[in-house]
Length: 295
Image 1 (tube, rainbow, N blue to C red):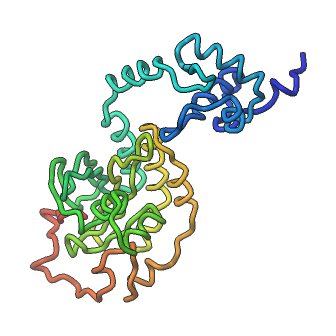
Image 2: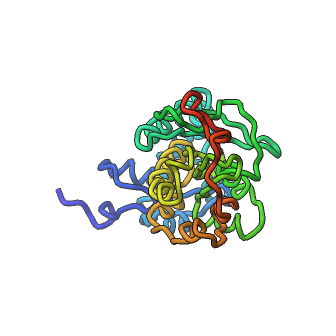
Image 3: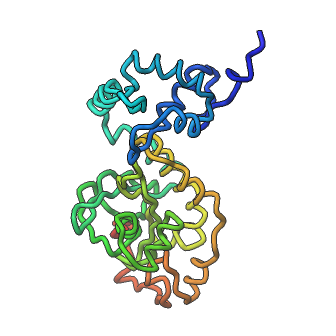
């Protein structure tokens, strides 16, 4: 039997699963935002694109299961069963289960070391690390403490913690930071933010390697995939991946390339602007150790 125009109407705010009634119910639940007051049926209709008659029936069923709560004034709010489900999810949640598979996949694609840094007051800490597949590599270990104002990971953490200035405005616009020689003259890195529910910053996902393999061109080539992997982690943590995916789809501006030739770039390490002499054999990492400090 053909569906009526009412039931055939596609709900807003969700992607179709093929189970229409669940899609419509999900669109109602996802219509609520953290900074909202309780919503009227009219407001829910505007946000979901559903007819009020459809909304009323689904809202009654959601209230029955305590997924929705109807106030005395007729407005609706999220019900207590949502809190119960959130507590169950949180009890079984481990950040490693989300990040490590993503980091390993990024490591396979790039061949370089992949790290995840979090902010601890005025420093950053390497929480997880997947080693490079190359013998000569940048060396950072889980638990290492580094400064926030040098290196790709630190710059991203500062930018999305509200740090002011043109440099950080550009990082927030591009959702990425490219660093060459900021912490160590032999290493380069590129990092992107990862968010949780409410777009709260979780940490910085990054690729790091020696400058012999990671120049501006190489990092710009990694940039879209890094942002896509950061978006995957953000989705898994309940955040909104749209800004990261939009940044991934944005072509390279060319600013970073000019930085390598001497022009200033707000999203590239300051040392990239300076002509750098080839390191001597005394400072160059030897094949035996193959290690340099990471960005």
